[in-house]
Length: 89
Length: 493
Image (tube, rainbow over all chains, first blue to last red; front, side):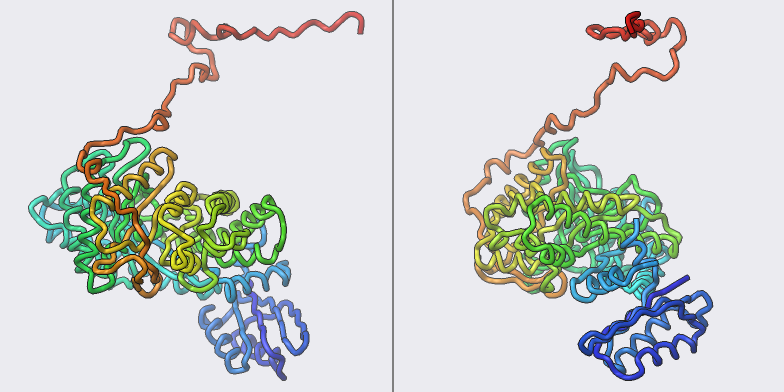
């Protein structure tokens, strides 16, 4: 079971590290990361495996959303099915 | 693998274009709660709703969080209460309204629909008492919504009910005059009411539905408008294609949420209603879509054509995205709930007569329209009759949700707050249809209702036994039809 973590906002030091640390703490495995910085705007998309996540998925969503607010960026954590449903027939 | 463009597009739709799932509505049958003792019946109703819907709100919130898609409302639709009221004719059905309100509070839903009666062909026991009690029921409760079906393509229009509903709408407004006449905003008069509509105020759980069911209403006018804005100056065929593609994406989210809610609540999935439902939030407006198509303002000549295209394209795009489509499906045009409509009504670009024309091609009807407080019950009945006639003849659902603004005149404003919005009071033609309304009776069903036909050519796949009526025809050509006999190949070739 996979989820997609997206981070959008102003670039600062250690965004990826902080998100990755949170993931590791709850046994969420990072499968793939794509990241770009355009004119100071940071955009990262991370595919993660949540099969062995040690906390309920909704709590992971809350933790990362709060972390995003702390860093001044917008973090979305969404189950991959929403993207599959919307963009694949 | 999902590509990053698709991911960012979805997130942009949710964050900036107001994409949401408007409602998860649980339909609950109350037929097994019927009892001639109203106290016992109310007890059963309360218990059943609380038992079935106890996890509805929490499940909706969980799904919303996991998939990152806002689910705005969780609601309940029940069997038309007139069917329960029929068993206890001596008692006022308002008790049922109060118990529905209490059950809605207990399970945490924001509306419960089904304080309803279906009287398109006439009044059965319970119907009359329920209709009489609607104004009181809506004034003493907060979350109960009421609807009455007064016509259908199959049955015609019950003009006695039309006359009655004109008076009931006025009374509902009068009893709640101190609260911006909100009673009338929770009351819908239908022609061809669907039995599985998840949207309020017209939701009820039809008699043909299962014991319990999950129906989902999607939304997303903001997403459609943004997609058209991005497309720029394309021709109208391309506009229709863009609407279809966007409606497909919107509906797929609704289908996902519906299936997930159905699985988690162990309740069968009913339908997805493919409606573009506006809210008063800026950008979440159906009127803005019409304006994006090239109208200076909603209400201009051309509005009906744009709306017809939109309504049709939404259905075409959505229908492939969902396994079961139902409810109202199309584009709503509730005036006070749509920022663009409010502006158009204020500037008089949009009139009641234009709205009536638009209802011939939209998904419902004259919705959330404030009218002057001195509008007579007969004029309201006349508006209902016109609207029902459009629905009856075109085999479509039409509805009327008018709010007589007691003590106010055209040009002043009503403010309900929240999703019901606010808006100006619109002008109504003051000429009286009183004599027509007073006639009563029933407008006969139109020719379109006579669709049952006997098809002579529907022969069984195997020849019937000798001597049966069809046996004499089997294998013989029908009159005027030549028997096919292939020519032998020409010797010259």
